[in-house]
Length: 152
Image 1: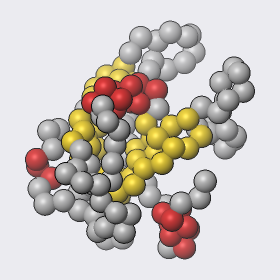
Image 2: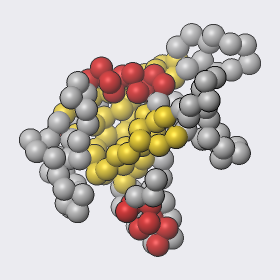
Image 3: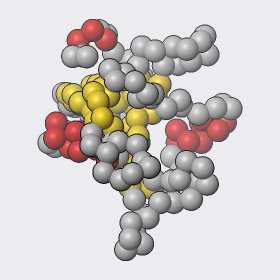
């Protein structure tokens, strides 16, 4: 499914960078600008990942407006790909779902138990979410007044 964000990212010559969760404590926080359900794809081949029954694996792609800026052209938007343990942590705190304008913080807290030899241990996350008073329309400006009010 192509979204307006995908079209505009292509038009403007770049995409929204992914949030990085490489080391314990890495955190991404901000206001939700958009979100969508997408199929998971293989990072090397781009092919859709499927379950044993042939159904595609799903993930929620959340675009957040952060206060991070890598350079002068960086607008601070980051994409969070919620699947696996991150999805479970999000599900636990977003009882009524997520909405545009909601505040979210995701922190990589550690590693779980390595269950299969040759595979990395699963990453563990802590997620905080606060729903907006009302959902923002898709064309609302992003940003938030006080980035320090998020808990991480």
